[in-house]
Image 1: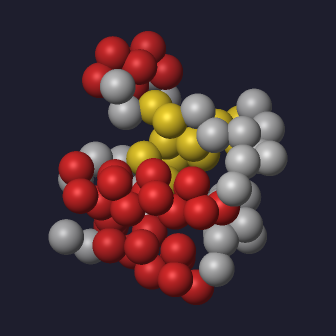
Image 2: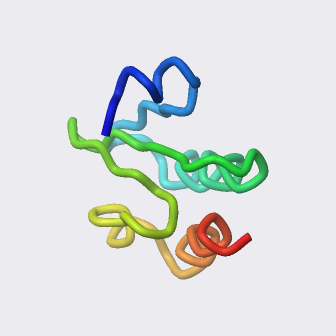
Image 3: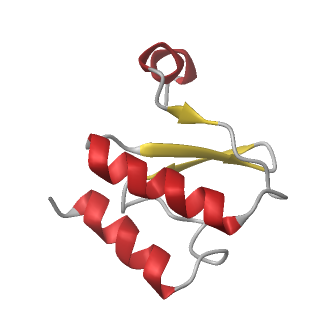
Length: 75
């Protein structure tokens, strides 16, 4: 994972663990619309949300949000 490459593309979304789940859901939905993976930083750890790496995020989101993650993976 090359952080610099993602930063240049503007696809990194800084999200702290204290921000609202609603904001994370909106970011994921925007990622679906743009057709690009959405990257979150939770408690300093990078989480790539593309339907494959959801470690740590799936525990924070509900079923509706998990379905949104599946939309990213399945065009």
